[in-house]
Length: 465
Length: 166
Image 1 (cartoon, each protein chain N blue to C red):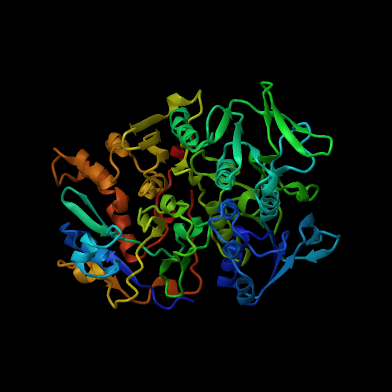
Image 2: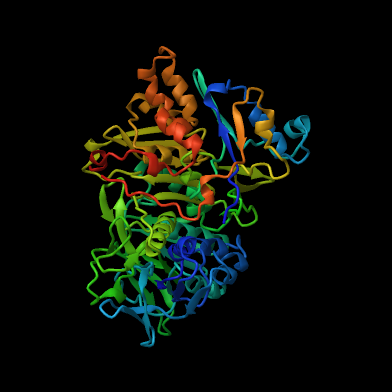
């Protein structure tokens, strides 16, 4: 049995572990487009800021592959797929046969159309190569424009700022971290940026990168006509599933590769995981690509188990984010900001205390917690994620949900004045925190700790919006 | 393959919410391991990995579940969280970059950021590697915490999961 894994990042690593848990003998071949072992992409901004030395960048070292008897083909990418012959095409035209194939090529940075975007001085920021290119330029960059105020953009801006570069952030939408923050919480982020001395332009976009006669970047022109002088541009407007090499193979692709709940694609013996796929979103109740590290790991683990003949099922996932920049911390999960037009479907609970620097927001839909957003104090954010997983009815303690840090404290506030042992009214409170679940489930937990989503009863009707 | 599953289980019915386990945990994970010095003299705040959740008459002491497939390990971007061969889920502090992903992903809220000497790192239950029985279990006056070292379900090589219908 030969397992071929296209891609060498977290989904591939998780798949290797899952395959080896079931199959010691099978041959595993990893196609690694970059000439290095799996590394952590989010860490490159930490490295640029000088917080993480380069020897800490690898997620797995050479020894990980050796110990699991994995052959890695470095420096070659998957260029095509011939499913009827059961083989893949590598860079340079080389063919490789497979019995089971895992597609985990991840995503490519998206570069929006701008005049003069081709050429030196304009970089995306998703790989070590990008980071090294930017680092090499740092000595002659005094001003940099970061296009996009998402996670990557903000972390890159922070790193560049810490290296003494004047940074200007340009964002198309009218808020910082547009996917996560709403307008109110974006003001907190903007305040932080102003304090740190980082310029930002919201609600505008770059239409052209202006170059001097030698080809070097001289500045950017915005849609509003403003000219911002700079020597370098970082483009961080997001990533798109890397489905280009799969064209013509007959695999079902929408925005990403479509997979079923076993992570199998429309082709036989071909599985997919990670940023490449369009998997089930537990909150939206539909398939969509979510490009985040923990989901890629989980999908890789499940795909790997199923590659080796297991019967694991992906129940779905939701985005989980934690990001900090200039001392400002954001923790969010699920649907943390509600788009205009659908507000009436949700109840948005907000607790704001500017003096203490606390901002908590919970989005409740159909009496279930759909998402949350916490600023600065994020120490027990996980309990909210547990509430999302559990899909329990939160209506009895809705107000306390955002007011108190400890959910147990919140529960106490709610239960005050109730019959202490009235189990009907207490039932839902008793599920809070660790006791998130009905008693029978908790018994199960004390007997055998397991994953929440496997023991929770999922009600499909509450998932749909 | 994992040999032994070691876990701390709370027994809700026995817990009276005295929070001695929190004190014991904070002392055990201090530098001097002396209660008074730990709370008054050391240069960092005492920090307990276990939290006593209390709601009216119900209370229990919650620390890391040391899950078989932990959410925190999945979420860790730096590789600082690992599952050891004996089933413990451990933070390698020198690798941790304090991104906070584990804190957001743990559904028990059992992993928390800890600031020590001005540096923030993830902190969670380590099952007291220096002791035979974890400090919280030893400190519990009411047998509301038990330490299970029995051979667990993690021993089997393959855990087949049934496909849940619906």
